[in-house]
Structures are given as structure tokens and as C-alpha cells.
Image (cartoon, rainbow over all chains, first blue to last red; front, side):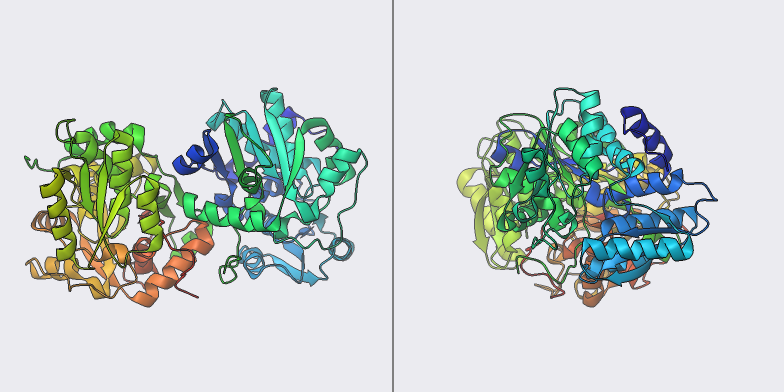
Length: 318
Length: 318
């Protein structure tokens, strides 16, 4: 597979490709939260995306970029959840088989979501190495096409379509906050947003206990993620790749971290004030406002709410 | 106060009046639920409305219909919650005092929401009579303008704006489901929807244990609501008035009822599949699909999700 550079043109082509299959998600403001933070604060609700997360954008772009010939063994992905659901859904839309390798400690809601779209789940040990190995075996045995959760220009370009949509909804945007895991979303967003609006600040947020991206960007050397970081944000346990590290260095303004208690409090506030369900990973960028790790100082601010797949019997504040 | 008939023109005027102060709420479909019910099923998300419910429409219309002179004693409302929040918010927007009489068993989330917009809460016994008496006293003492939760053409017209918006979003709509309490929402919706699209079916849904509307429409005689009906749907404990009874007889196709277990199951499914927070009252119309009290038979169907104010520590399935 060739690896084109991720450009605004690639992101625009992705948007055209995925348009029939993804939702233009709503942008919600909150009167009470805007008053509290002294700026108009808006939330881009990718938790209301099909499949329950922004991952549908990249997955649909990747799967619909493949030829019928390339898809004859179906597709395979490894994922802690939302990318798996998104790939299962994209395969369902395309009418091909999907096999998803998931860690055995994945949340039940995420397992159900993958199966809901007809995806076949293969459980593995909860390490990045075990996930990758499980996917490699399926590629070898079935000739399935592998869709990486972030280290793939097609996936990054798909996630970047979110920024095109957001800037149409909010052309005056000045500050954009998103979570960082493998860096695919932040890369795609930042490339698109800053190409269209050079003065826009893009800040990535990650749990303090899974801070490989912050350490990497501050040291200038790709730092590993601790294996199985103990964060409630189960979608943010991934690690940057060389590709996303380079893209983040080039396009993201800063990376800040938040505490586990802040993530839970942020999640609860978003449920209460916005009346939408966000999973812990989705609450991470808002937690940066709550913990004053980012100060909007009057800048028009948007927070990406990345996903809403939560096990409703295990709410973290109970 | 004169009591104009509620017409399409009155609803259109309301829409123009309230447009700067209410959100055009998103319409969300669900791939999985559509597949299950054999039709394209869409959800009009008034739980994402400012103040957390559709009540903002009627309250803003009523409060902004009043003159400065009429507002000099502020406004007063009685409410189990969402109407109170909506009136408090409308008064805040207009810059006048709001006093809200609420039953002492109101959910903490609803009390907080009223206070969040600066409303003054007066607790009373949990009966309709006590609520009405509390409001009368405040009118007498403060000269406050009373905003009834539903027995008021301005409020009904405001709620009807929801149908104008919905039919722009979904012109091919054939079947519309909404909850019934006092009948203001159902009346407004049905008047607007059927004036614009005569073949459209409008079905109201209420808890079987709070079925005054069904009994009234079936018998042709306004039936009382049992005092303090034991339904989890705390927003649906109101009773029809002579006005809303007459409007429902003229404009609504049918009223069906659902069980308490069905309401809880519906609420949980909506949280899981749509990733939005709906309160029990909001889940009532979807429960009618779940319990097969309504069969869409391929008709393009929309369900109004009326509100999202829930105490997050007291989820009914836990």
C-alpha cells in the first residue's frame, strides 16, 4: 500500500467518499457552561455519530477506498472498541466480512456494538502486542484487509473530515480541544483545521497516566505508552506511531493532561448539562477546561465529544 | 387575557417570536432500531433543547408575549420540573424575576435546573391542587404573571413550533408519536402537523397508570387523573384541561398506553442506541413501539424525545 501524505485535498476527497455513510453531527452549545468559562463553548457531538463515535469517519474512508478484489477476504481490525465497531459497520455497509480483535477487558457495550453490526469478535490479552498479533494471524489465514485504528493516511484523512464539517458549522472557531490516543484524530483535525484557518489553536488532551503524546512532543523523541495504562478512559490507551508523532509535531499546538478524578467529573457534568452520553475518553478534553489545564480566555472554543459507548450498569460515579 | 384559538398562524407567529431563544434540535435516526421496526425511525431530540426539554418553546412564547407592564411582578409557574426550568430560563432571558412552585418530591436534577437559571423554588405538597394554590398565592402577593404549563394558547402554540421544525427536517413524515400529560404538546403538534400534512397520523402515548387522556378520549367525557399517579414518568402526572381535551379530540388520531417496565426498558434502549439522555417521560412514546402498542407498518415514523433532566444517581435499571 502506498502511503500518501495527509493533505487537505486527501481529507476533502475522504469527505466526498464517506458523505453518504456518516452523520453530519450536531454542534451543541451550553448556556450554563459558556457562562462558567466566560466564552461561547460548543461541543461537536461525534458521540451521536453512527456506531457511536468519530471512528466511523476513518473506517468508512478506509473500507470504501479498497477494491472488491482487496476486500475478498473481508476486513480485520484490532481495537479497544470504537474503531472495531466502526470497521464492523463499514464492512456491513460494504457487504463484506469483518473480524475484530478486542482485548478481553473491553467494555460489554463495545463488544455488543461490534456484534450489533455483524462483526465477529476475537478476544485477546489486553496488550497492544496481543491485539496486533491477533490481527496479523487473521490477515495471514483469511487474506483479510487490515484497517489500522490510526496509523493509516486513509483513516487519518477520514477523521480529518470532522474539522471540515465543524468549520462550516462554526467558521469563527479559535480553539479546538480533542483527546489524544494514537493520534489519528488529532492529526487529521489539525491538518484540516489549520489549513483552512491558520490562526486556530489545536490542543490535544490525554490522561496524565497515559501521557505518551505529551512526553513525546516535549522531548522530541517518540516515547512509549506504559503497557495497559490505568486510566478509566479506555479509548485512550493507544500509543503514537512514528507517523502520527510527526504529524502532531507539525500541526498541534500543545498537549495537556488531566487527572482520573477530573475525567469522571467532566463526564458527569456533560451528561447533566448537555443531556448526551459521553464515554470517559470523550470527557477528557472537557476535563482540561474543568481542571484549568486550558484557559479559553474568551476564544471561541469547540470540544470534540468523540464517543458515547458506555456500559450503563457501571457508571463511574456510583 | 383573551384566549385565541390555536391555529397554524398562531404557531407560525410563535416560531418567529421564539426563534432567537430556542435551539433547532437535531433529528437522529438509528440504523439498528430502524432495522428492528422495519421502517426508518427518527427521534426529534428536544431533550437537547435549551433547559433540557421542549417546554422552552411554550415558555419563551408565553413570556415574550407579555408586555413590560405585565411583567413588572415577574412570572410564576407551577411544575413538576421541566416547565419550571423553561419559565425560569425565559424570565432570565427577559430579565425578570421567576418564582416556581414545585412538588416536594421533584427530582433533584429538576430543582437544580430551575435554580441554575436563577428561578426561586417554592416547594409544596405533591398534588395538583397544592401546586395551583401555591401559584395563586404568588400571583396575589406579587402581581406575578402566571404561565400555565399547558392550558394556555400561547404555550400550546409554542409547543406546536416543534412540528413546523420537524416537518422541515422530515417532510415525508407519516406517523408521529409523542407523550401526553396535560395535552399541550400533543395539541400543538397535532394542529401544526395535520394542517401542513393532513394524512399524517399523530398518536399520543401515556403511562397505563396515568391514563386520563385515553379514558377521556374513549368515553368522550373529560376524566380526572388519579391524584399522584404511581408512574416513573414524573413529567406525565398532569391531567387534561377542557381546552386540551377539546383540541386532542379534534386533532389526535389515537392514544395508547404503556407499562412501567416498558418505560424503563425503553429509556435504557434509547440511552444505549442513541447516546442521548432521556428522562422516563421521554421514553414513553418509544415504549409504545417496544410493547407493540403501535405498529409503524412501514410508515416513516418520528418519536418526540421530550426531555433529558434525570437525576444521574438514581437510574431506574440499577
